[in-house]
Amino acid sequence: MDFQAGILRDGNPMESLEKQLICPICLEMFSKPVVILPCQHNLCRKCANDVFQAANPYWQSRGSVISGGRFRCPSCRHEVLLDRHGVYGLQRNLLVENIIDIYKQECSSRPLKKGEHPMCKEHEDERINIYCITCEVPTCSMCKVFGAHKDCEVAPLQMVFQGQKTELNNCISMLVAGNDRIQTIISQLEDLCQSTEENSEAAQRELCTRFDTLAALLEEKKSELLQRITREQCHKTGFIQGLIRQYKEQLEKSSRLVETAVQAMEETGGAAFLMNAKQLIKTIVEASKGDRLEKIEQGYESMDAFSVSLEHLAEAVRTLDFDSGRSVCNPQCPFTSTLMAPAAVPSGSMVTFVHLFAAEEDEEYFDGEEEEVGEDAAPERTVMGKWWHG
Image 1 (cartoon, helix red, strand yellow):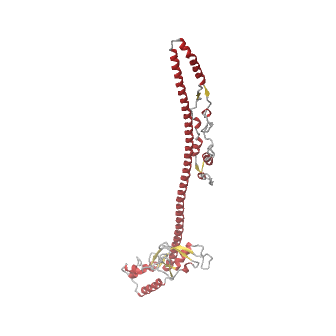
Image 2 (cartoon, rainbow, N blue to C red):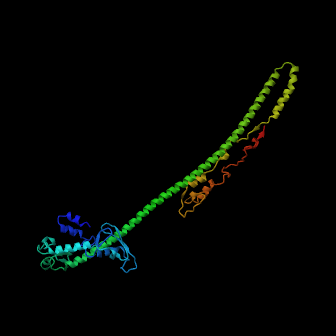
Image 3 (cartoon, one colour):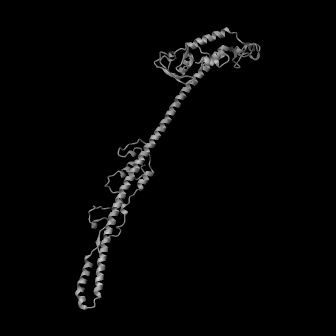
């Protein structure tokens, strides 16, 4: 306690000193013994014990099996930890006790001034020295004998003073103990709020990770299926272009025969015409019979076989929700531990939804039937239909 600074701030040193010697619990001058807390604030040992008892109702005495306890300083709210001795384990502030003794000696040696004690308003020369229990106001002896309180029940002022001081002290102890409990609840709620925020952030990160994993898996499967469509496209267009070349060659050959036949028709001499006509006719007939070009079956250009149904997967995604029960983690599918599809979804569950994409690569995902062949296979045995000769 900085007694010197407090005294210098007030013009009356004794009044300033008295303010420095007031207990924050009972609001009276410290009564010995005076204990000093770890935060350097002082309390009457009795007041400290009342606060300690209110905050630790199960601690009974120094001989109790309960070991130690705690309470908060009423001045700064610093938490004071006590051992099994309770407040009797706190150090006494002998300096403050000596200052109190000196202050009381100084006060007793000074003559009392009239203004230092409350005086009766009705009898200005009479000090207020009794308490009217009936009217619940302090008054003087003259008021009891001759004044307004002559028919009232009165009691010594000091007795009522001590009683109300004790009652107020108990109320303060209750408030201090209640404040400690409220502070404990506030701390618990703050910790709960912080834990909720941390858990929410962790859940959001986990959800984003699992959806990113699912998106990557879908993208990978899409690329794979697109490559298969591209390969089939290249195979079919290559085969068709080969047929186009064959038909062009046949057209060119036929055009030359037509030109030769036209020239033969222009021959006017019968002998010369007959020398080449028979062979030319035979060549034309053999060319017509021998060139058997393949034709493509109707619908060969269709790519309907490469269609995939995603309606049930889209419905599963739309109905995704958090699992209200205990989550089951699938080590193969990290995003199936908390997310699942309701039972109404055709896929059955999120596990089924994921397994559709995690199946073996050689499994078919298309609605149509497809017969794949190797790259070295002949064109006649290619996909979609039979080749027939014209």
